[in-house]
Length: 422
Ligand SMILES: Cc1cc2nc3c(=O)[nH]c(=O)nc-3n(C[C@H](O)[C@H](O)[C@H](O)COP(=O)(O)OP(=O)(O)OC[C@H]3O[C@@H](n4cnc5c(N)ncnc54)[C@H](O)[C@@H]3O)c2cc1C
Image 1 (cartoon, rainbow, N blue to C red):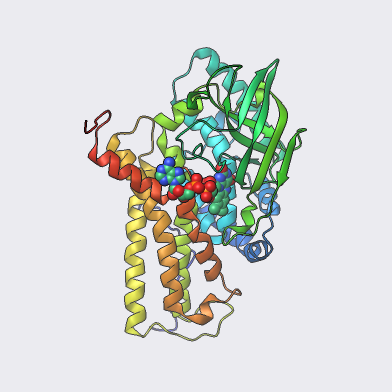
Image 2 (tube, helix red, strand yellow):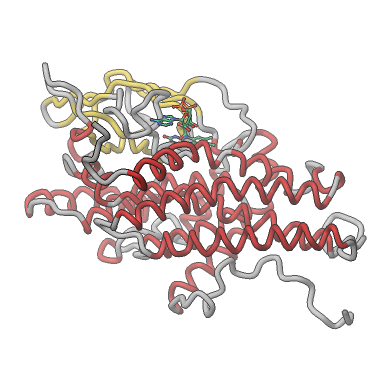
């Protein structure tokens, strides 16, 4: 190769706009996310990972650059990105700081689920009107004040897997609800301004039902809200996902991020809503591959310019990683492109397959990157070992863990709705 040939571009778009037929406006927004990731997120990632501290300054910068409102509908003053556009932008974040991308996802979902998803679902005219008025207030807080929302649903039981009703409960009272319960692994705990709590509305004497799930924005400073426990995990350390306790927390009815019954409707009719944890890991898979190419070419900043690419074993490993990455991209791009209300069974199975593939392959590619690049590449002074640790977390994320995806694909591929072997 001649010296005049450009270095490998480790910051090229994951999904090239022309090849993936993206519109100009989508390509611009995704490029903006990529630029933000490289310029703002990457330099801060190692420090927050080391100290397990939350990168709140990233969210302040996102507010300044109007990225907190990426999925707020245009009619409310936001950017109005749809599901796929958001996923592609979030994947670009994931390349530079997995923990920020994952936390940003929790925030953005509060606007995507209450915005484009809710607009796709049936509700009465009264509910629709009340919902628009309520979400306008939430969106104004985000757009005007830079408010950050999180999304605690995990409880350490079967609620987060969607099997039973959430154990966190909201008792209806005059003017609102009183919330009691506990959420574990709550990313942005202690940093978010509002916790978007999934809980079960429970009237006196009524049985708990998933149909009565409420999605409430609980102010972090409300009396009765506390953050507890340590946070010293393997990966995604900067998400600071500690435990949240709610003890007799009053929230007004305006705290509803979706009208009654609509979260349950969304979970059953708009299942791709749970695919939104995957973009972060799509970005991590790309980052592990890019690291390897750069490193083997002797172009990794902070390392001596030693080339290792001439060894056939390295070339074979890179070929295998490339194939795995392209398989992951192709399946994931299809799944995020076809997300919609009332998808076919085939589309839902593909969404599970995409989630499984991204989560498992991100870690497999990162593991192979370490083996291929060698010992000097896994020092903490370089990003690869963080990418490896962060990528390990993807398969554990409820409600669509890798195990649950396998479980559902196997069952749903073999049984039609209502079929049994009796
Ligand atoms: C970095 C990070 C950030 C997170 N951030 C958030 C957040 O912001 N909000 C949030 O709500 N959660 C968050 N989570 C939590 C996550 O979704 C899980 O709830 C968490 O990993 C705890 O899981 P557990 O060990 O309690 O799982 P368990 O419920 O004990 O399950 C263990 C495993 O068993 C399998 N399993 C569980 N239920 C079933 C079932 N019904 N059928 C078949 N298999 C099943 C699953 O594979 C699961 O991984 C985060 C997790 C991580 C790692």
